[in-house]
Length: 276
Image (tube, rainbow, N blue to C red; front, side):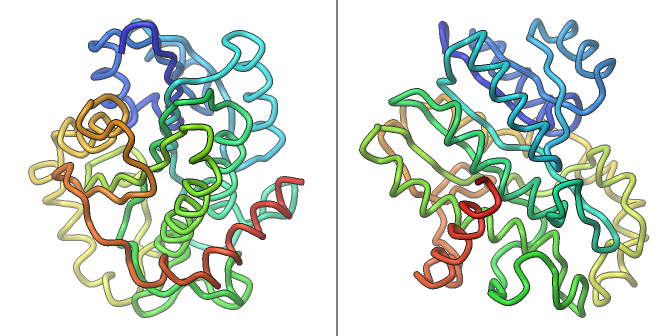
């Protein structure tokens, strides 16, 4: 990884920070991205990285970030779209886009399009419990935000997977690999802050117990960072694109909804429309 420039969103804490720590140790120049300038600079000082700030829920912030990174570095060798957002009700950003669709789908689309060098690698980090059918009439939670097992968080993480499949096809001629990593669960700052109302109805009875056990079961954040580090740096996956990897760093089958051409096209068209 020496000589490689890597940008990781959502990397001032949690899984993203551990991913950054591992890649700095491999010799990469890592750009940490977080919303809070103080936290970003503190993490960068600790790890020996570069600090950047942006709100990945806001398209204008993301475009400004891309311009600054392009001006300083020309482009990226590795992009890890790790940042997540999880709200307990439908919220729109300043551009009128549902915030989780913006953070999980639109931002990875824009940063990949704007910053990747030929031959680079993109790692899009899914999460939660992805894989349920993508609802084409509900991409921005226009119809429902929460259900018995449905949540917009899981929905947009699955949408990210569909976008990644299409992006891999589009970037193949440039030699840019686009893959998806599933990290598993981690006792991250975002998860610690989640209110009960952010869980689908079926999971709410067990959510308090999970929160109590999480520090013991999911406290080691080096484990959920492994799949991202593997896809970003390993020669084992050189040339691999359009693939989904589990927390054990092994390939997994795509969910059926992600393989549906209508779904991939609908998500791609949404990204093109919102990105302008």
